[in-house]
Image (cartoon, one colour):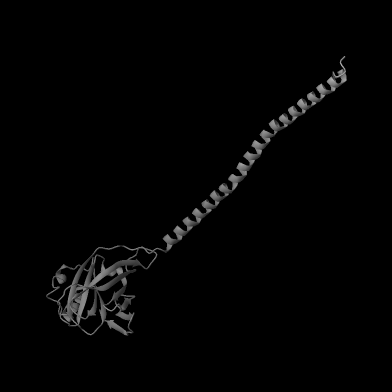
Length: 251
């Protein structure tokens, strides 16, 4: 044996060391391979956990929708139901009477004839005496003073409010709103004129238990008028930019 050649014992020890390193490397590799499923399971669990808030939000969304439905039901319960009747309009003018605003509820031919005579409108609206059928129609006249004849009183709203829980006749309030508009005429005499609109509603007069009306004049002043019975006088109250008193109109 050469003096510089490794001994048999040295070769054996070297081989054993190499084998140990190989075995250790294999164990580490096995550990890495074994840990992959655990990581996948952990990731899946995390994914499931992260989906829980989404499901919770969905549940909250369902509750919110339910609240919205309840709110809609409440709105429907408080919504006023109107008959939306058919109607026709007749605009008119006459010399100012001194009443700033007025409303008249006409329920028969005697009322209409007297109303026309008081305003000297027999010729202008004479055809109404023959045409109106009060068993199926009701007439309401709204009027207000204007600084010149170059204005028109336009009907803005008409509705019938049911004042009872059933559908019985005679429990309905006729509601109207009107406002003054310029006609656009350039040349107009400076004469205070009463302008009005006669509303012919396709509802029998005996179905109307009350009247509520509002008028806005040229200055933006508002007049509220109403009665709880067709046999009562219609009272007029002014509110708006100017202070005003109360007027009454006999039917």
